[in-house]
Amino acid sequence: MKSVLQQVPWLSRSSITFEAEKLRKGYESFTGKRLLIPVPVEAIIEKYLGIHLSYDDLDEILGKADVLGATWVEEKKMIINSNLLEGAEGRQAFTLGHEAGHWMLHKDFLTSCFRRGDSGPTIVCRKRDSKIRAEWQADYFAACLLMPEEEVTRAFETCYGPDPLVMVNRKSFLGPLAKMSHPAIDPALDTAKGIAREVIEAGGFSNCSKEAMRYRLEDLGLLINKAESRSNR
Image (cartoon, rainbow, N blue to C red; front, side):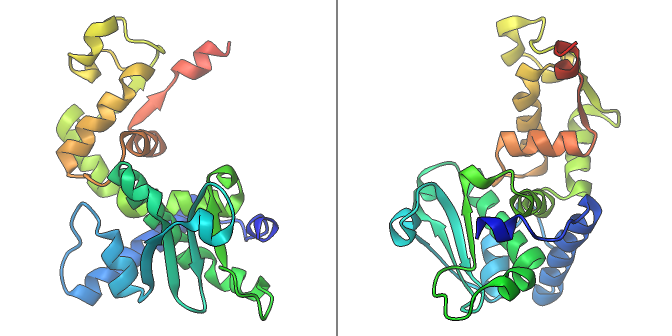
């Protein structure tokens, strides 16, 4: 399946964003209500997409290590590794968004490549495969679904105003005081998670991790990382 995941068609960020927004709008039409943050990704998968969702020990079921999630397209069945229930909610929700991304972006292509008679899952997602094209696309879809641009931007501006924050240094000049002060006083790599935390709290993104929000802020140009480019000179 890894080789097939590497062969999925190239998709632009804008097209992935469009598909995530289409899913959000479809769920809103289905429920007749505006979709609020935090995005109820479990409900979207089960109630709107009609997929049977469960949690189980996928490492044991599939005989493979580090499996995060698996989807059987024809059976409309999705299993998330039960060990994610023991960690932070952000990891669980992001994995659900990731699997929803595969469903929206790749299910037709992968189904066409699946050999008739195979009983295994159509899609298997493992930590080690995160750089494969299809996995990156599903990750980006999850970020767009759980952290929509408009809502993230609004929360960021509530905290920091309309201008982006530029991280010039790897470490804040405030040192240990950086964790006790406002992260925007001296944006740096070691304050990035603090910036992400404030945006999460301001926007109600309770099912998103600080790491995921940090990367989303960078992707949207709200948090600009110049520290790493300087360190490579």
